[in-house]
Image (cartoon, rainbow, N blue to C red; front, side):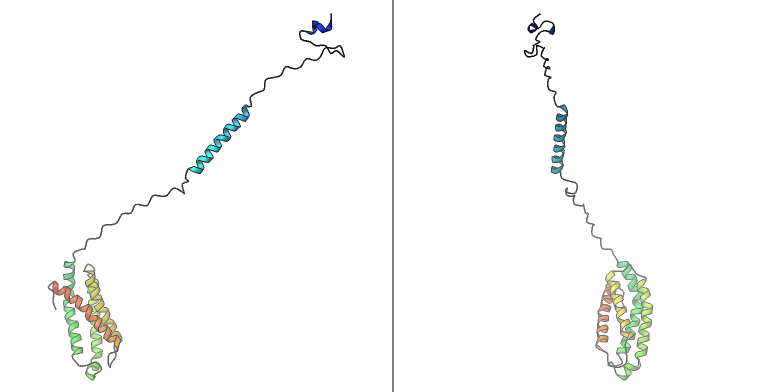
Length: 202
């Protein structure tokens, strides 16, 4: 059989003209496989990119402005009626206010400051005033419900008289003593005005 006719070598077999031997058959080219792994990696990368963009656009919790706290303004306190408490304090101090008036007027009626008559009675004026302070202060403390202005005025009168006699000496009155005496008269006027309006006099 002519080897060039193919024969036993099968259809399509070719003979090498130099060697007379059949040429090796060329392998059948295989179809290229689709790169699935690369596609999956690309999809995941795209998804990660989208998530990153959303994270950049969406404001973080710290960037979100907090809503302003709701504040409620308390209703103003209604003024309380202190008439009963004021009258009770006026009634309690009336005899003591009469006493301090007598002590003060007796001392002032002896003449000008620095005169022998005034200086001779100075120790009694000091002791009588201190005794009055010791009696009136507890009464004021027992009436906390009285009008604040009333209580402040009476306390101011007590404090001024206490400061006055704590450093009072024979001889002409120094300027600070005059200032304390004048301030005590202003406080006394406030107390007297309140009690007179409530019908309590001394």
